[in-house]
Image (cartoon, rainbow, N blue to C red):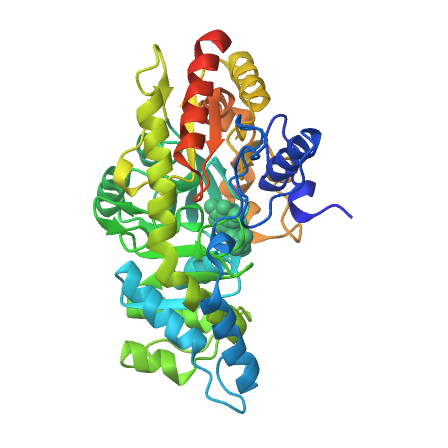
Length: 454
Ligand SMILES: Cc1ncc(COP(=O)(O)O)c(C=O)c1O
């Protein structure tokens, strides 16, 4: 059966995470090597001094150890996998939320079942609904679009720029009197340029929802991502940094927004612990969902959180070494990083003159066993068939039945700059357990290939 991600693979050249990983695995088996074990992420074999496989691996699981095991056993032994009650005294989600808010520098955190659920809670927290418009980058993950549609609001796309994140100028152009929020996605490990985004948002009275799913642990000018806008969300799905397989969180320092999000994640009710955190309840009950995090997830995340800085430092170190090694290549154009120190180093990106050169470059780097792809893990949303046809779960859905919803036209014409950028950029994955030898191999490979492929 096709998976959720495979069903979305509708665009020419757009690699989803699953397809990218499948491609890496196929490349590995074509080389006659098996899938990586946890202790062999990326090495030449001892018999072969040349590098014949580089696999960045999943980040968080490479840091699993006794702490995750013990935390899970605590839950099993207590017989209390539910966050609010049980035979024991469940505290894993509670403690994780407290630790996560502290780590991110916000007053409140809410653990939920996924990043997608976190987005739905944040949108509910911001009181977004029919008649509102929300500005979303044209290249990002589905959930940034679906959370707006689920609220009955209208998604309006803004182009990305060479940061690979939303272009602040296009964000400003897309604001109308109906714009309630912008989703500033920190995509592919790199912070969006928040200073101009926050300035514009403040001036135009637009709320900022930071989507940090692909940049958990990143920062912008010394502040943790997620703590700068009105509300931030994270995903702990396996492709992210710290992970519990699935999971998500919402952070904010706004007590009303937090209460609305907490209510939405629990069918509209409010467990006393949330009112205790905010000092008092200020919001009446309304219809919500069930996105509660369980104790097993909270246990793993509680064990992963203290390792987040180590994971990010490792990725960042390798990414920076590679950026430093390639930045002097004649004519190379690197991803524009508004704050390189805040980038988590998930991947290294550079731009080729056109699509054909990009494809040649990817091919030649893969021949040298460098884990290379087009920009991966997201979707060119405005050219997806279901978006072009404005298909919600019911034909009378409010998003597309307002005068603006009827008038809006998605498709390639609303995201030309994004399509051009997508066609030119090359992505090289970074693993936290790479060695200097691997960094040097990648640098040499890019040096050999860049000029030849141009
Ligand atoms: C940018 C972005 N936002 C939100 C999500 C949703 O996270 P989840 O898969 O945990 O629902 C993802 C997932 O990949 C993502 O990449």
